[in-house]
Length: 220
Image (cartoon, rainbow, N blue to C red; front, side, top):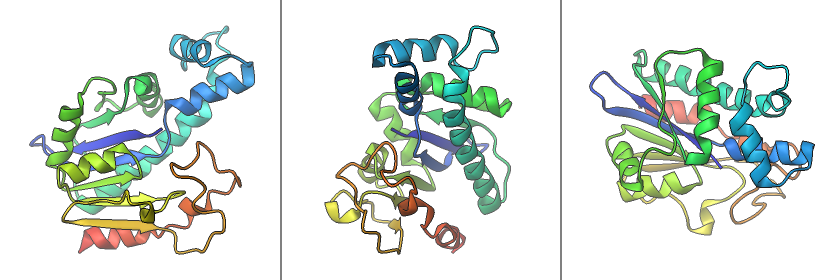
C-alpha cells in the first residue's frame, strides 16, 4: 500500500504530489501478527483506538512505528518542496483509499500541523486524476497513481524500488523520469508487485537510490 501527499499553492494549483511507500495496511498487519487476530478484527481495533491516550489502548504501541515512518517521509517531502520551490506550503492534502483514512488522521495528529487535510477515501478515480492533472511534477512509486499520472500526461518522476521498469509498467507521460538503484542487487526484483516488507530486511533497492539526482533534475 501507499499514501499520497499533494502540495497546493495559494492559487489552489498542485505543485507536487508524492506517494509515500507506506500505508495503513502495515498497521493492520502488525496488529494481526502481534495479537493473532484476523484482518477484520485487527482493522476494527485500529479504527477504534488509533493513537488515543487511554489506559486501555494497547494498539498505540503496535501502530505508532508505522505512523512515525509515514510522518518522517512526509516531513522530508515538505522540506524538499519548500527548498525546491522556494515557498512555504499553504494547505497539505493527504490522499489515499478509505482504509488509509485512520492512518491519515494519525499523521495529522502526530504532526500537530493545522493546515493538513485528510481526503483519503473521499475522492473518486476521476477526482484523483484531476488533482494530478495540474501538478508541476508528480513523485510516485510503482503503484496505481503512476498510471493515473500517465493517463493525465502529468510530468512524473517514477521511483522503482523492489520492482523494475522492464516489467512494462513504467511512466508513459511525455515528460517522465525513472529513478532506481544503480546497484546490482541479486534480490531485485523480488516479485512482480514487490513485497510488504523487504525479504532481506535491508531495503537496499530503495535506500541506494540517488535522491540528489531528483533534486538536480527539478532545479534544471
